[in-house]
Length: 343
Length: 297
Image 1 (cartoon, each protein chain N blue to C red):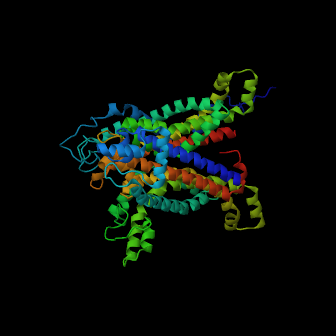
Image 2 (cartoon, rainbow over the protein chains, first blue to last red; image 1 turned 135 degrees about the vertical axis):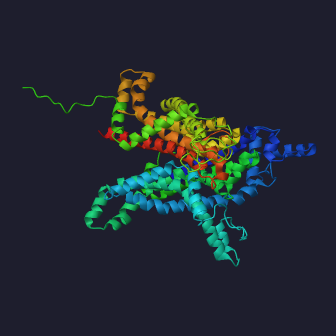
C-alpha cells in the first residue's frame, strides 16, 4: 500500500511539473508581447517596463523564469486579465466552486439513476429491458450535449414553463457569497427568504444537471451492466443462491460489492470528460463558472485568463483522476496486488 | 459407399470476411451501416447536390418554414433561417464540414498514430517507459479538453479546429496501436515467426498487421463519433468554425436567437448531426459484437 501511495505521489509530482511547465510555455506560445502575456498589462510605460522586466526576470534564463513563475503561482500573483484588469486568481477561484458544484450534482444524479438501471439490465430474466435500456443509452451517447440541452429547454422551460432557462439564481434574491457553492451559501446565510431562495436555486439547477448527467449516466449504465453480468455468473453468487438467500440479499451482500468496483474506475476515467462537458453546459445555460469564463477569454484573446483557466482545469482533472484511482485501490484489495508493476 | 459431409464445410474465408458475415446477421447494425454510407455520400457530394449556395441570402424568404408546413414553400425544402439562407443547402454542405472533416481527421490521426505506435510498440526499455508516462498523462485529458487547449493557443477557425481534433486524438491512437503490438509480440505464433528468421518488418507485415486491422477499424469507427462531437461542440461554443460557415454546430449556435420562434432552424441541423453520430455508434457497436462473436467461434 505504501509502495502504491509512493508511486502515486511521484506521478503527482511528475504531473504537477508537466502542467506548470505547459502553463509556463503558453507565455511563449501565445502571440503578442511576452511581458503583456505574463502580466496582463497592455500599455506598459518605459519606467514600468524596467520594473516589470526585473520582477518577471524575462532577461534571465528560462529556468530562472520558470522558478519565478512557480513562486508567483504559489503566492497567488497570477497577473491580471488583459481585458478587464481583474486579478486572475480572484476571478478563477470565485468561479471554480460553481463548476465543481454543477459537475458534482450531475455525478450524484447519474449515480442514482444509472446503477439501478445497470443492475436491472444485467439481470437475465428481463431481456427486453436490457435491449430498451441499451438502446436508450446508445441514443444518449450519440446526442450532442448542446442539442439535448436545447430540446430539454424547449420542452420544459418554454412550452411547459416549469423551470427557468438559464442562470444560477433569480436576481430577486441576494445571497452573500461565502463558499461559492450556491446551495451551501443559501443554507448558511441569514436572509428571511431562505426557503424560497433554496427552491429557486434547485429549479435553476434542475435542467443543467439533467443535461450534464446524460453522458455519465450512459457510461455508468454500460459499465455497471457489464461488470454485474460477469459478477453474477461467478460461483460465489451461485453458492449464495444455493444457501437460500433472496435475490435482494444476494445483490446486497455479494453482487453489488464486487460489481460496483469497476464502476469507480470507469468514473475516474470519465471524470475529465465530465468536467469538459460541464464547461460546455455552462456556456449553454449562462452558468457563471470557469468554463464560461474560459470560452469568453478564448473569444476575446485574453491570454492571461486562458492560461490561468487551463492551469486550474487541467490540475482539477488530474487530481480527480488520481483520487479516483486511490479510492479504487482502497476499496478493492485485489487491485492492490494487480496494481504492482503498473504506473 | 463414400459419404459426403455437405453441411460441415469449414469456413476458410479471411478474418475480415468472417467479421462481415457476423456483422450482417445483426439487421439493426446493417441498416445503420447503410445510413452511415448515405451520410458519407452526402459529406462528399453534398456541396454538389445543394440547390443553392449555403451563403446566399434570399431576402424575399426570411424564416420560411419547411415545405411540409402549411406556410412552407417547395423552393426551400427545409425552410430558411433568419438571414434567408436555404437550410437544406446548409445542411448538405455542413455535413461535409462536421462529419467529413471528422472522418479525415480520424484517418490522419490513425496513420500518424499507427506509425508512432508501431515504432513505440517495438521499442523497449527507457524509451518505452518514458513514452508510457507521457501517454498516461495525455490520456487522462479528455480529447475535447485538449482540443480546447489547442484552439485557445492557435485561435478560433475551422482549420485550427481540424488540427486540434487530430492532435487531441493522436495519444489514443498511439496508445491503442502500441498496446496491441506489445500484446501480440508476446503471442506464441509471433515468436514462432521470429524464430523462423523473419526480420522485424516481416513479423510486422505478416504476423501483426492482419491481426490488428479488425480492432483498428472498430476503434476508428468509435473515434469518428467522438471527433464529430468535438468539432460540433467547438463550433457551437463559438471557438471552432466561425459564423457564416455552414458547420452544423456553428449553424445551431447561429440560429439560437430564433429557436423559439422557428424551431426548425435548430432542429433540422441537429437531427442531421444526431443521425451521423448515431449511425456511427451503432455500426461501431455492431462491429464490436461481431468481433466478439467471431472470436468465440
